[in-house]
Structures are given as C-alpha cells and as structure tokens.
Length: 176
Image (tube, rainbow, N blue to C red):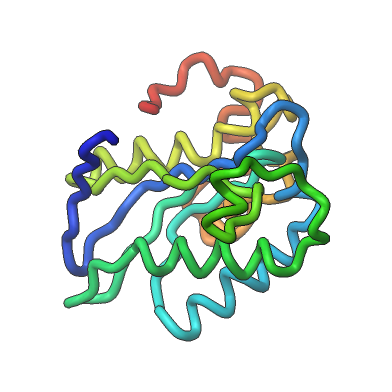
C-alpha cells in the first residue's frame, strides 16, 4: 500500500480534486447536484469551512476551501460529504468484493487529491484552474456557460469579468 503523506495545516487553504469511482460517462454529480449541495451544506454546519472556489463536473469536482484556525481535519469533511451524497443515491451500482466486505458503496474513489496553497499566486492559479475546468474538459466553450461553479458568484463580486477566458482560454496559465 502506498505511503500517502498529507499536509495537515490548521487554518490552511487547500485545493482538492475528488473523483467518482467510475468516471467514463458517469454524470452522478451533476445529475444529483442538489443532493451534493445538501451534503456540503450539512457538513459545513457541523464542520465549518470557507468555500473560495468550487466547480462540479459530471464525474469529479475541484475546489479551493479554507479551514478554520486550529482545524486541519479536511479528511473528516470529505468523508462526511461523500457519505451524505452516497446515502441519498439509489443503491444500484456495481460493487467489488472488497467494497462489499468493507460495507462501501461503489460511488467515490477512496482517496482524494489535496494541495496546500502556498501563497497568493498559487491561490490565484488554483482558483483559475477550478473555473476553467469545464472548458478544459470540453463541456462548454465559455466558463460562464457552466452552471455548477462558483464562477457566477465571483463575477457578481467583481473578482472575475463575465467574459474571463471566453474564447482565448489557451492563454491562461493554470497548474494541475
């Protein structure tokens, strides 16, 4: 088993990628977007965090969130978000014997990818990556056309112009 090393930084700001187990053609996250939103809301009430940027694609999501001071427990938050979402879905997915033995659903990949944000430049690069992702995956031509994103709120707040990356997304310097 790989030796995963996580950076636990109380009050840290993190970029996350969280994937469904089966990605090819799977649209559970957008099809059940209200269930995902409810799961996030429930977890945020019990385990607060600030959402700086969030995008939900059919089979994965990216976000930049900030934990409260003296709290580095992002793992519990993701476990609860995944669990809340999974419990609300019909139980008709195929499950491996390993998942059956563990009592797990066949919805999510077991792990997630996190990156502790280092500075303002890193923060901006990851915020841009979050919001350009639907264009990168060919789901829309313009960022503003993707409905499941904090981009719309950030446009309202004056952080991004409405036509950001609209037609010239190749010029954006983002990191994965």
